[in-house]
Image (cartoon, rainbow, N blue to C red; front, side, top):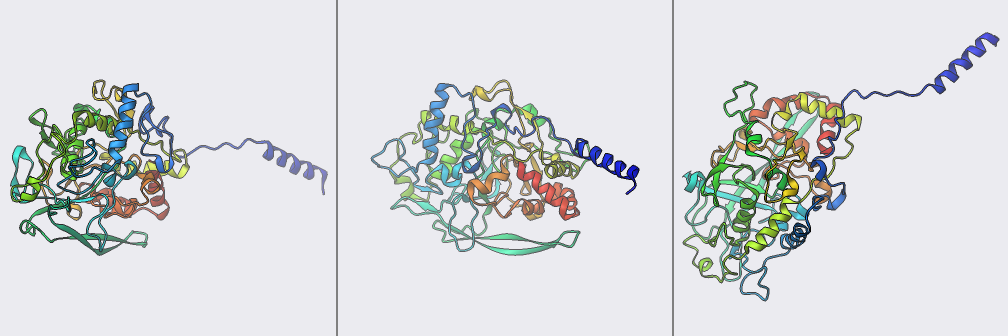
Length: 465
């Protein structure tokens, strides 16, 4: 070999081996974006990722968190009972404990074929017209939701079952998909027919970060509202205005599938009343409509059954649950998915960043925290396919509150399922996207037009939240 040529090859190889590899991502990582609850984010992952308290609680609040955790998980029992701290269940009810619908502070399961009830599913009901204070008009014989269980000696109200219709579709690249449309049947009504009732199936939502949502100021939520689409971008963002039982007036709603509860305390007290038949100082009346005489005559567990002290402990517990840190947040594919998520304008409703207010007396630890819930907590028209056709205060039958996406990628690990949307009909994140319609129709179609590689990137990003 020619010596000049030989040394040239060696020099080139040495240069190549010694040259430091330089890599530049095509997509941007934003400093701190992995901290969904800001400085209050938990780094504990795995099956207990949703039941971690925020750091920095006072000793007093820490004790309330512990007691509230116990009250959240343990079953309540019917009265009279040997225990006086957890009696008063029912007389009719959907669940015996908060954790029945929010297992490990996560999501409930939907109704499946052949089941008469599920851990975390319930059916709201009403009749045409507007009820007291502008809410749904309840049915005289049944109230606002079907109670499928009852204490011994009391009649349950009715049963709900489901079948599914298969909907087939195709992505632009030719890959096919299937959605399962639930069809609900109400049967065994004990107090008159419910066949013409307005219905709205629901599953329990995850509990993480609720205090941080409660701590956002009204003005910051309303800053994203655009009810009449004044900027002409096809996205409205409508505030619901609901009844505050303590203030005795109409205020901004922010909790629940249709933003029909104004604050966390009323959300918790409403669940005690509607789901477990337990009275509180906010809802002191037993959930026993007038024709249900056995229900009305049944012994109670005190007045109220959930004392104000216990309600405070539950409030501290539910407001102090942290949000887990994101995973794989610097992965190139995840960052690419984040950019596509923005390009498809998903963040028009799934707003990334808020800062909590500097005045949240219910839990001072939560003040002035930058959080990334990926929700605007406003109502949006989600189209005919998701419509329940049941108005709820200002929410029409097609409108639902944008759901926060934080923690969505850990639901499988925490709850052993991946069911999403208001009645759990979506079996995974991709199906949840494909059920979108109405204001989100353009974003859904943009997703369907992506390549398989880009769809995988979007799912990777959402799973990282």
